[in-house]
Length: 259
Image (cartoon, rainbow, N blue to C red; front, side, top):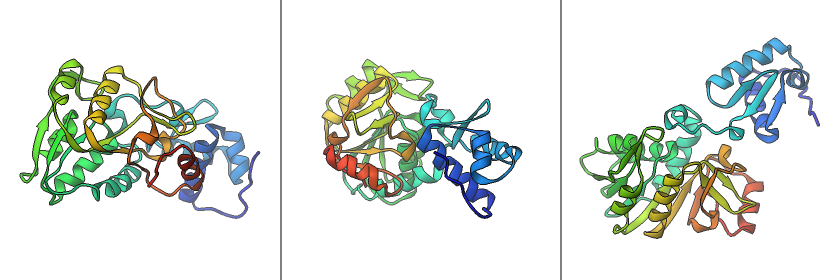
């Protein structure tokens, strides 16, 4: 059903409300949005063009769909998407890192945001990653010991994947691992990626880590990739950018902890 917004709204307020509607419903049309917000279809089309450019939704003929319905696989295509949300998650996760630890970052734009914080900070630890972008950021901080996994370069991920990567990771014991995901389906107990080699790397790291943390913004929830690599309850904490009472209640019922 359509909820009519009464009274004038600033453009940014309306655009934020559009994003919320698209995220909730998956798909909306220009005509129903125009009716919803009491503005012209042309005004809505301008909003959708802007939001599509910001990566908040995807424009389609006659309306828009949620980015969660068609996740971007290429890492470079996701670098500019939801940066504020990813930084908010990274700030929470950063508090888990302690001097002297050996930690792992996988290939993810959200863990890349965490790598940038660590590179700019004063923690002293050993960091292992298979992400080339993360390794470049981390290597700028001389107080960190930075180790790249090596292996076959996957251009879509801009990182190392494959049997050689898993072989290098197998003997390492991590104090903490920080991992991303293509999708998190709390109802089905699934944390997933779209690549089999990425799944194998993540599972190797999880077996070898004393503590495991999942970094996932709100757009990842309710999405399923093709390769399940863990359950939400396998992580010490699932970090989100904001409080979500409904997701929190579902997570608690499924034995997972959101923060």
